[in-house]
Length: 74
Image (cartoon, rainbow, N blue to C red; front, side, top):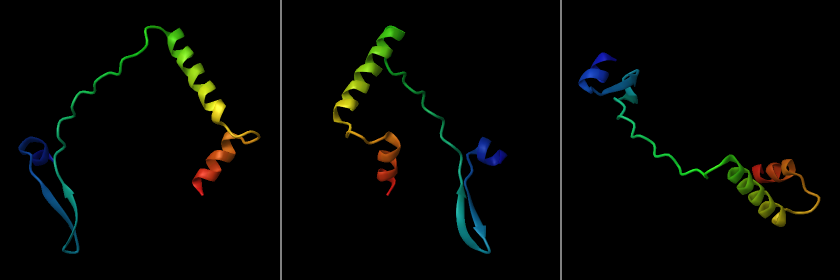
């Protein structure tokens, strides 16, 4: 493990002589860019309310979200 970490070594992992995996060093993670957020919590709730209303306009009458998800999984 130290060679992988410090020397950036790579190893092929075998099982009964057959290659089954590869041990390689991870590349350093790139910093994530933060998404721009609305200026206030009220703006966030307003946006969630708007999205809920948009979804409800297209939602089939008499069908629960659980039923929709069950149908999607089939």
